[in-house]
Length: 64
Length: 128
Image 1 (spheres, rainbow over the protein chains, first blue to last red):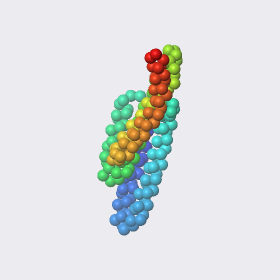
Image 2: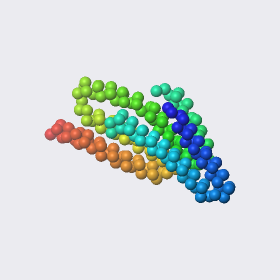
Image 3: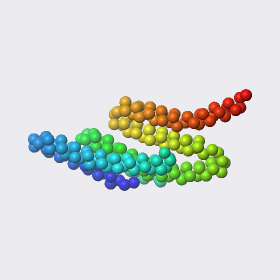
Image 4: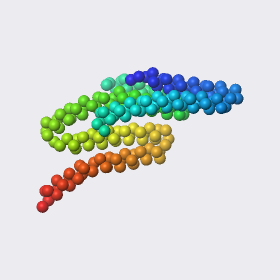
C-alpha cells in the first residue's frame, strides 16, 4: 500500500501545470509543451511499471 | 487484508483525482489508474490461498481439475477485462471500453468451448 506513488504522480502533475502556466505567461510556448511532454513521460513510466506488476500478480494468482 | 486500509487509501486518491482534474486531466487519469492498481496489488494475493484450498478439495474429490482450472482462468480474464474497461469508461472512452469487453467475451467463449464439448459428449452417452 505504497501511498507515496500516488503523491509522486500528483506532485508531477501540479508542478507541470504550474511550470506550464509560468512558461506560457513568459512567452516560451515551446518549452511549456516540452515540460508537459517530459512530465507525461515520467508518469507513463510509473504507470507501465505498476501495470506490469499487476498483470504479473494476476498471472500468478489465476494461473493464466 | 483489512477493508479500512483500502478505504483510507482510496479516499485521498479520489480527492487527488478531483484536484488534478481541473488543471491537468491526463494526470488525474494517471492517479486513478495507479491507485486502482495499488489497491488490487494489495488485495489479490489473498486469492491465491483460496485457490490452493479449492484445489486440494477438488483433488480429494478427484474431479477432473481441467474444468476448475478453466473456471479460474475465466475468472481472472473477466477480472482484467472489467478493470480495464471501467478505467477506459472512467476516462470517457466508452467506445474503447465496449471494445475491450467484446474481446474479453470472445476469449472467454473460446476458453469455455472444451467444457461445453465434454458436456455434449456426456449427454450423447445418456440419450440412446
